[in-house]
Image (cartoon, rainbow over all chains, first blue to last red; front, side):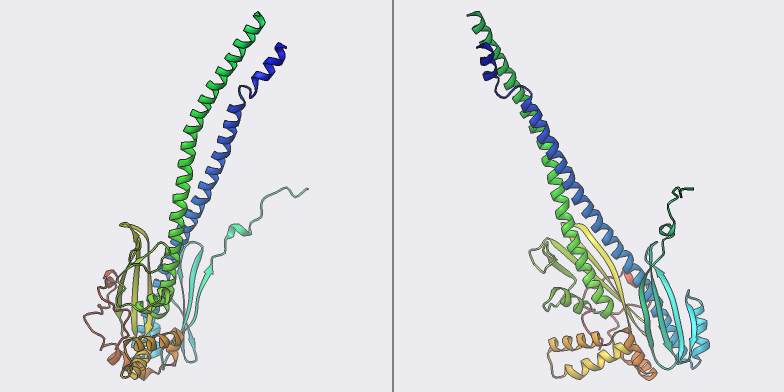
Amino acid sequence: MNKKNETRSSGLGVGYVSVMIIFVIICLTIFAVFSFRAANSNDVFNERSGEYLRQYYAADIEAKEILAKLDEAAFNARSSDTFDSGFSSAAADMEVELSKTPVGYLAEYTVEINDRQYISVAVSFYSDRGCEINRWQNVSIPNDASDQHINVWQGN
Amino acid sequence: MITLKSSKSHVHRSINVFFIEIIIALLFFSVSGAVILKIFAAADHRSRKSASLEKVILTAQSISEVYSATGDLKKSMETVFGGNYNTYDTILLNSDCELDDSGGITLVTAQSRTELRSGVISRLTLVFSSEKTELYSVSCAAYIPSGEIKAQNENVSGTSSDTSSEGVSATSSENISDTSSEGASETSSENVSDTSSEGVSETSSENISDTSSESFSQTSSDNRGGEPLE
């Protein structure tokens, strides 16, 4: 009889509530940490994206300034009637690769965006008219580390 | 009788222990719940900030792309936001980066132009801020060879006599999109020299800064980029 009373009165025993509370808190903590990490990684991604955009347009500005200088040099060379010598000497001061074409010059140069990418530009300057952009392209710098294999045991 | 008494006291004791445990558990739960709520609130705040920044970056990129191709601030703004506005120095945007006078994001534009004999290089700085805190800023540039400027001027002068100012801007916009930088090759050398002596030199000298690179930091107070060179 006494034993029956004891078992009946105990109901939800001592310790069950603590265990449940601890379980709920652990679950909530995990959810909170995961949601914070998700929001944080999204924020970091957006900040990186914004930083890349800034770097890209900074390089784009630099590339356009070089183009403007080259076009100005071509314009001056055209005005002085000595296009070949005038343009090549003016472009020699800039970090530009010049190659002669039947109708003028092809100028090629690169501007670094960051340590992984650069803008590659090729512009044709004609001796009798303006210029023509042949290439304005983002190029990835090949990562040497990606070509390296992991040093694992080959089995011999 | 004795056994009944002892069992009753045992039940009372276990109930007391149970209530004490519940009280301690609730206290612990409330404290840890407050901390967890704080983490959730921080995550929500960061998520909202991130979403806002994402929209701002996309808007900045859109404006910069159009500006890089055309060198025309008015066209860039109209392409991105729509509508026809007189000034683009300061623009109020809502959290979705749409034009809204009661918006919480302010976009300030600063434009400078450097005139060369061969063309015009124009630079644009966009600064997005919210409650006096800078959210994002980016600078971009456009180089328009004089051949293209002359082509724009010719088209604008050909249509501006009959049309309203809206018509002029629409015409110039079409011409800008048609004549990309590759189009410079179609201009003869005579046209280039003519443009440098006429088309560009006729541009208001107060508005266009000198050809020095320091002019980049100059802030435009009027809507220079929107108006075609005449």
